[in-house]
Image (cartoon, rainbow, N blue to C red; front, side, top):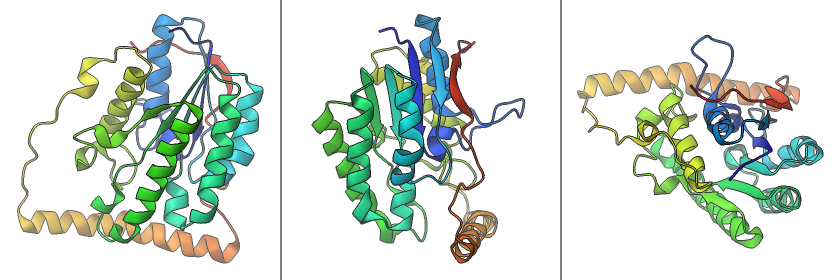
Length: 258
């Protein structure tokens, strides 16, 4: 199928963290990869990415959805909800998600939603597993309600493999972004690059001392700064992602992936 205009909305995963362009010009991510592949069959495709790191579903609804609707896309992807889970905002998730999808589905011919992986793979976050399950149930039910497309990342046998993620173990790394892009293209009935879905080789088992060292590095450089930043932001009334803007706010032509 040919698409005229593709708009991505969501949070850091849709923005492209942690998949930097090789030249250091910014984050790429699965949305840029999908847009580049779509441009192969739709050379006149225009693509905008309104996603901003740290955004909750209610913020996506208020800040990104009006802009997306005004751009009149025929394809919209929404990847969000993770920040609602981390902040424990269960009461607003369902209402915000429903309104987002209802609104963009009136404009776009194709809307793609995503489930989240099991965050319990990370030490210290097992207690929020029920929240992730609740969000995934909401996403699945909302996709069925509005007849949208759904990428259930849990169907990928490597979904929880650490090698798909960046140094913080929370955001996708380059390998993970390529796999998500392949799943989106497959959902849109377009063939992805087979290399993007290559099965991973068996993981090597590190000795206990090396595993412990990796956990300590992760705690020191990612977990502790994140917790400190969260506490500081609450004290001064800031939200995660404040000060950041969409990387591609206006639709523009896309260069196909080489």
